[in-house]
Amino acid sequence: MRALKAAAAAAILPALLLTGCSQAAPAAPEKPKAQTEAPAPETKPAATGNRPAWAVNPLDLGDKVGETQGESWGVQVFRVGNATTSTDGLWAMPDTQEPVMPTGTEMTVYNVVFTNTSSSDILIEEGASVSLIHQGVEDYKMTLSSHDPEMFEPFGLTDRIYDIAKLDEIPKYGDERGFVVKPGESFAVASNTWAVPGDIEVEAYVSVMDENGKRLVDKSEIVTQTVKQ
Image 1: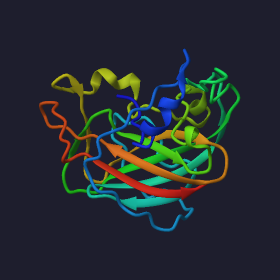
Image 2: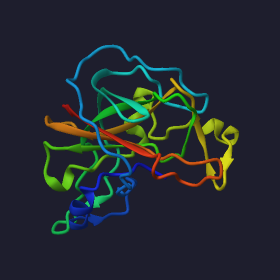
Image 3: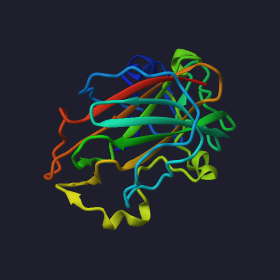
Image 4: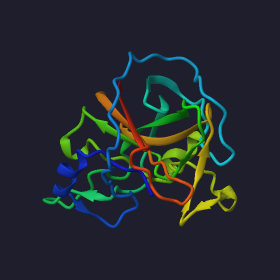
């Protein structure tokens, strides 16, 4: 499962056309939990737990611009830096057929750190993801991001949650890989959005499952906060 996009995308993206490019198409997640409010942004080093052996992204990159707490997850948002796209994006304008996100578009990369703040191990799917909803751009752009690997690699990041070199070591629960996050452990998800000023609504989504691989919708969670770019 790749990154899940906000429900706002359902009203915006049908007006655009798909092109044969590398960016993954957004999809709206189920919203099983109530959302939380964000405290005032601040900049300081990360205060996160240990990283599980399967997790790939570092936890201490960038400036912290937001932090909030859900039912079982603490979420911290770090602004890492800017990069440009190396390919055209997936979506095109229907009238001109031009890509909405052409090669060379400047984007801002974020690293969002999830910490298990509960007292129990949590088994998650690869469905842990981040949606960045940019209030400072046109409606048809606000949910779009780039999944171009070259966007993340200069920062030592990837849009996967796991180390692909360790994929065979990650156990399966039913037909799905299961990622265990112990109390106090943290992992990170990288994402990006348009490098222009504006409020960014961050939706941090975690899909939880049981030992048989069944998704536990009532245990899954979306934690939201707003940060300024």
